[in-house]
Length: 375
Image (tube, rainbow, N blue to C red; front, top):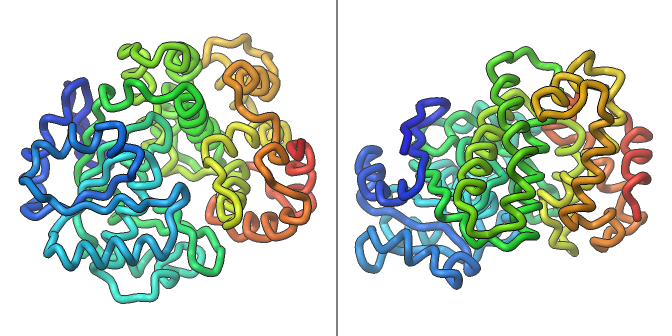
């Protein structure tokens, strides 16, 4: 196991889940409240982790695939009723993001929307947020070290709530918790992590340390993802993918881009339950082509880091990888219709990831990108 101090305190390694009670004590959490989901409970992971906590520790499992404002308030009410003073977030990006929302609304006066980044809410989120300990069960989102929570408001907007104060106070990354993750989910979450590494590296903001971390994460994913998908019990591959996902989260403090502004907007479609990682995988190739002439030598540097030839067409290689991993060919196969696209484009233009795309994108640009993946 290893202890990492970067953005927050991270315990990384096989069996590190056994440090749960010790790490809660270190941040003063004496009455924890667990946020997870029914799938994790059904698979036995919840009991496996919380057996180290006091019997009867309260929990909230009704976490939607794309966390909603209603679920945040319901969980916050249960948190307060339990007299809790901290949160254990166990799961993928959805439980971790919802836990961040609970940590915010349980300690800050409403309404929730006033804390959204695009509405000037960053400075309104104080250090008074409830402490969160995050334990990821997928290798993808990087939410365990992310400063943002993506939440669907009741009016249909999917907004980012961003603050250094929302980064979990403690993180436990135990690769053993990802063993047995189904191939499709392993692929989609792994490609989510790859999108974080690629987009943050291409972001025009100046942050060489984040770029170095992103290159290492992309290298690990390119080498290990297909092996992790092929063999659910390959702990070496799972460990490498968990580190790569962690690196993606560490790196995207630098900012993301059009892949995420579009996937955030698509994820806000209330009639569909679209997986964030799948959306990112579909959108990466056309966005990379859109940005190619505005990133200098960065695509060549990505190729080199990933073990590809210097002049490789990375967008094409990503399309081939998607096919090998069984990622859906396009958005139409997921239920997205052309009638939905004008609203998606409008929300993408307002998304917090839009300004850090390396090439400024207009509504017409987004329309052309979406048209390429409407199959």
